[in-house]
Length: 228
Ligand code: IPE
Ligand code: MG
Figure (cartoon, rainbow, N blue to C red):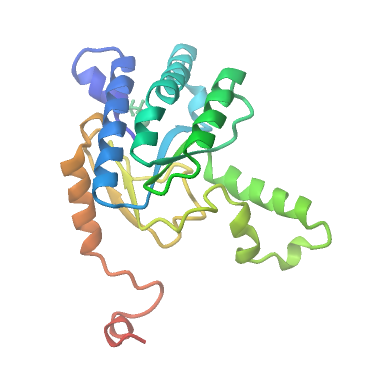
């Protein structure tokens, strides 16, 4: 979700106003995904590199995150949404960690859309933490014969299928250390639309683009046509 700051600057507003407007869009996109019967939505809210931002902005983002967890969780729960938070939660304060645990516990049995919010997340961190958790759980195994299937249960998104579509708003054409492992065969979609303007119609444009892609997973077009 990129472009909150630029959205605010265009309107001569503080960056904070862009982040608040960004939260409104998160709500709209969750609703739109739910209505479109999408199973999994994963949002990159705060990367492990975002700590480098000015102190004020970082603390405001944390406050906003707390506020949303406290005030929006009941609406999500009533919509049968299962909420998950992924990332290294260690640096967060007790209040935030408590809110996260509470929100996940409240919604864990829900069977609708799974919304995962990545905070203090990095794709490289995810792969490394998976390896170290695997090794701790299987001290008899050696890294030399580690397989992809070995790691899968230890990755942050172990409960979700591999993503079909990746969307980055705000004009940049990079993955910026998001789900590096999981994006191996994901269709990538980049748009100049700033996150606070990325509404349900913009989501439909992204889905329409996805539907035109041919997903070959290494095969040829001819093989796909003949079903082999
Ligand atoms: C993305 O918007 C939101 C977060 C990282 C929380 P930005 O804050 O990166 O917005 P721009 O890139 O400055 O426009
Ligand atoms: Mg940005």
